[in-house]
Length: 191
Image (cartoon, one colour):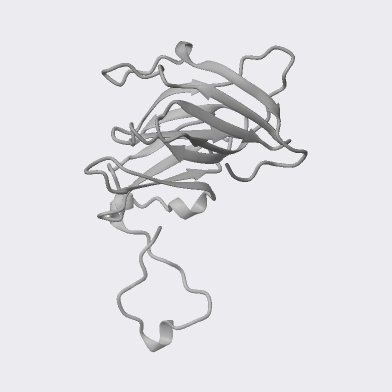
C-alpha cells in the first residue's frame, strides 16, 4: 500500500515511477511481500469494516476499511511459521471478528481481528492421513460447521459449534472431526 505524490512535474513523468511509502506505515513497504489471500470481515455495527490480507511470509495485515489504515500501528499478526505462506481465509458469522486462515503447512488458524491476536490453531487428527494445504474453506451461517477443501480434492468438515464459550474463549479440544472424504480429483477452489 502506498500513496502517489500529489503533484507531478514535467521532468518527473517517466514510464517507471516509484511510489512513496506513507509515514503511517512506519517507512515499511508492505508491497515487498506478496499478498496470497484476502478476506473482508466486521468488528463493529454489523458492517464489513475490516480487510485482512494474508502474505507469503505467514503474516496477516489487518486494515480498517473506514480509514484505509492498519487497525493499529503494528497490526501485522504472525499467523503461521515464518516463511509459510497463507493460502485462504474466511470469517465466522456470529463471531464476525474471528478470521480463519489456512497456511501451506495444512494448519487452520483462528485470528481475532479486533485485537490482532492468533487465538488458536487447528489441524486434522485422523491417523494415516497426510493433510494437505487447504485451498478453500467456509463456515456455515450458524458458525456450527467448518468446511475445508484441499489441493487434492479432499473435504474435511469439523463441528465447531462448541469451541467458543460464552466469554468467547477458544477451546479447540471441543472441535469434532465429522467427515473426511474425496469430493473430486482436483483442487477444491470454492465451497
